[in-house]
Image (cartoon, rainbow, N blue to C red; front, side, top):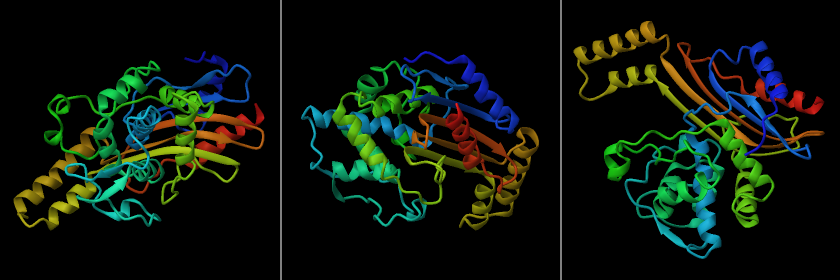
Length: 320
C-alpha cells in the first residue's frame, strides 16, 4: 500500500546488525507519520511469523464493522460456551482484576472487545471469532486491504475441536508490514471507517501493562498497541512429566532423552515469540512500528531486549 523508503530500511538494518538483533528470525516495519507522504521501511517487513495475540486486531476490526452496519451492537449479550473457554489460569493476566470468562457467563460484546484488546483475553477472542466468522474477518478486513497471507485461527484450541475446514489449515500468520499498515489506517481513521478506527484506538489505549510491556519506554508521550507473546518451553514439559499421575521411570527417561536430543540437534529448548505493534507519539516523532521475533535458545533466563530495541529506534526517529 505505501511506497518503501529503501535508505531508511538500510539504516534500520544497520541498527539491528550493530546490536545483534539480526541473529534471530524477525521482521520490523515502521511508518513515519510526520511525513507529508509517508513511506514504510524496516527489515524483513514481509517475512511471515506467528503473531501470537497481535492477530486479535483483525477480529476487533470485523466485530466493529458489523456493529457499525447494525448486524451487532456493543450492548448485545453473548453467552460463553465450550470449547472457546480456554483461559483457565488468571496468572496469565498479571495485574488484571477482571475475572476469567467461564462456560455459561453472559457478557456484552463491548466487554469481550475490551478483554480481547486490553488484556489479550483468549476466551473473548475465540468467542468473537465464532460470532463474526473467520470468513468475514478474512474477506472484510484482511483481503480488503490486500494483506494476503495473514490468517486468523482460534487460540489454544485443539485442532480436533475446530470446524472441519480449519482442522488442517495453516497456523495463524502475519508480517510486520501488514500490521504496520493496519495501525497506519487506524491512526488516520481510515480502517473501514472513522467509527471502527476510533473504537479500536480507544480499546488499545487501555492496554494492561502486566509483566510484558512490549516496546513501551518512558520516552514516549503516548503509545497505543497490541502485543503478543507465546513460549514453548521443553524444560517445563519435562518437569511436568515428573509430576503426572501416570509417571513411570521409562516415561521420565524418554522425556529426558527427548529434551537432550532437541538441544543437541536443534540447539534450543525454548522458543519464544515476542511481538509488539502500535503507534508512538514522541517529543518530535510520530510513527507506527511493528516488531515480530522468534527466539530459539537453550538458556531459559535469556530475554529478548525489547526495551533496548525500542530506545534505539526511538532515538533514530527523534533525530531523523
